[in-house]
Length: 323
Length: 112
Image 1 (cartoon, rainbow over the protein chains, first blue to last red):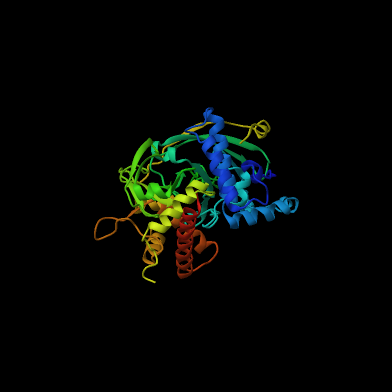
Image 2 (image 1 turned 90 degrees about the horizontal axis):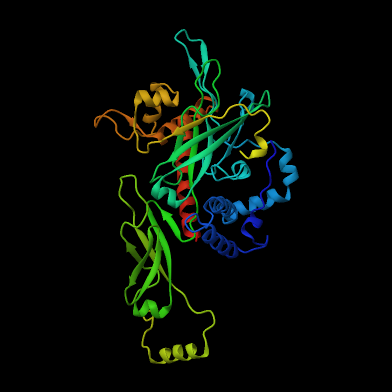
């Protein structure tokens, strides 16, 4: 079945020649606008948020972007070839059906060309089982693999997702759609597998069907980065805030909190907010780290410049004293 | 799947709920059944260091995670269908793990 080409540049509203920084900025802006927590229309917001995420997943990674650009330039040609169908199955020779997902947050286009990187494509061939007399009696169906996009909010609270599985029989061309509900447990991790027993390809000769594996892929959050159960927030400070200390309101997964930045805070310092991260498998919660970076005014006014000059004259501070 | 694909050949629509329980461990027999691999093969893969049970003798009976079952399916496939030997698979798995770890780190450092 032909896959539609996705114009990720259009999704993010950037030019094809956009720099990595422009792409990042466009993503953050749109992700904030459509984030399921803030969007006015939750359903459209979530759909759009996942679309933006998918686009950024590809364009935000220089390697994948290059691959995508090449694919776009040769799209007509690429379409004529028959790459493995989503789920990584190539084994049409077993009479396996072609499978498409809906509701995972990723498009068929993504699944076909960018899904499942970093692991072996899941094309497990059927397993022969032998009867007691030694003759082959059953053939277990193939496993199917797909990605499922999960937001940080879903990790925090858990959710139930509705996924549609469309199978197109390779022999008859007939399609069947199955709707499945999958519970995403709170505390899932990136790359974690969710096994849907018996939802893979059908078995042969009375063999059991294979499994469907959904691999968790975290949606990028506009504010937080994730490492294990901990979240990282980039806290940008003005130089005087870093020197004199300040109280700053920052977002967390449970609403905003005011964070007291102590005086003489250096760039790179991590201020920890205990148990404001993601739930961990052990039932505890990770922490939120605010990572300090010091920003300078792009164009200081004449007054500001004068003040800096004054400080330059009066200060005895020399960061290169040891040289 | 989107609507335009549904009408032709549309047969049935059932609603099944799947509730995965993270952190569940499976004994050797259950693992063999779910993975569709013999107990003997599983023990061989364990001895080769390709998968590691969470608990193993003498601290208790062997128990495997969902990830381990997935890994067992992969190993068995590579060995029986592609004829790779266990040392090869081990090297490949180690490298893939390393790639995955580095990729996660790059993603963490690069993203917003």
